[in-house]
Image 1 (cartoon, helix red, strand yellow):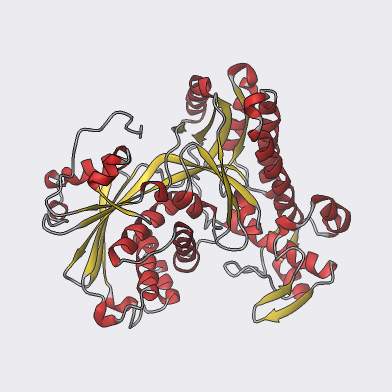
Image 2 (cartoon, helix red, strand yellow; image 1 turned 180 degrees about the vertical axis):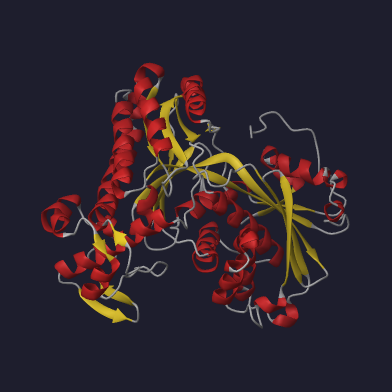
Length: 506
């Protein structure tokens, strides 16, 4: 991740994207919490990283099955401000629900002692639920120490990190990825580690899987790190960390919007985990039907798969329909599966014997979603010269939404928002909508014209009046972390200025 000074940031026209954090920094002297007033020292360098949330336009939960996804970085972002400190500690401060939360941990046990393994650190945070947000950061610090070959005697000085964010938590717009990417970008810059944006994203995903304990795919972290403003990141999520196939420009006259349903969910929730596990169960069963070599590996299996590379999304839809779809069970208990198939290939979930899994639909979704994403990208490229393509794009979004529901990842709030968008229709400049991310609530993505902003806000207002839930609207894109880089503020540099023209709306 490129490190720039403030004059370089301003010369590149990127200062507007750092301004909210610079304003927060300038205002720390007036905070009620005395520790925050002295959080940073004026005679030490300070690193400032920014990472955005994302709007999942197409692909969503198919990422863990190797699908292509289309993701838009938002103007909503998390900023990480970092300064080294003399003590061998990692001290964190963040604003959550309008209040500051503080957390601190001795860094030495992260490399030696009871917290020296990711598993031990994960268990510690699992036993301290109120501090679980800090796992996204501390897990990254531990991983970067290991990457740098750091020894216990070398972990001085430590870190002080302060976070500020406009990415709402639990809305399905990747608040955790924004936190991870911003934190790891700042820490790696301060350690002098030269991680590429893709390596940074994969490191963040690893921390979320193995320290935080959330079985997410790679698309959120890659979008936050590698996305570009007003472009859809086209990412094929195999092999990890995936292959960036391009950045698709949103055609002039069109825009992707988001409306938060106000129904909170978590990627680590049971619904998402159940569907993900069911998809890997389906892949294991397909491997058996296809005669692939399966090797038991403890509680999991390894599959020799030269044709599909271990990914459901690589199976052609016609082959899936003809050979496998109707031979998969609609639903199956974990105990029944384990008795017949031994385990799954997924390294971050496990089959629960007492749980029932929607195997057929969870396996069907990534196969069909891959075809939808490919068609969507094709139509989007020609949208500027064919306005009728917008209707077809909207239909693909609605089909994706219905498939989420068939997997069990719907919610009454997101269904209602999609219904309101469909009712407004092309006459109001709206063509389609779908649930996003892990499903079971969160945000819907909407395709509309650039002039449809008022219609989107009317729908959000009507939904809010019906449900009593605030319906936040996302209408602007922003740069990914690699576009803005890391800002290095040298001692004596000015840290606040009047926001220039074009300051992003937050």
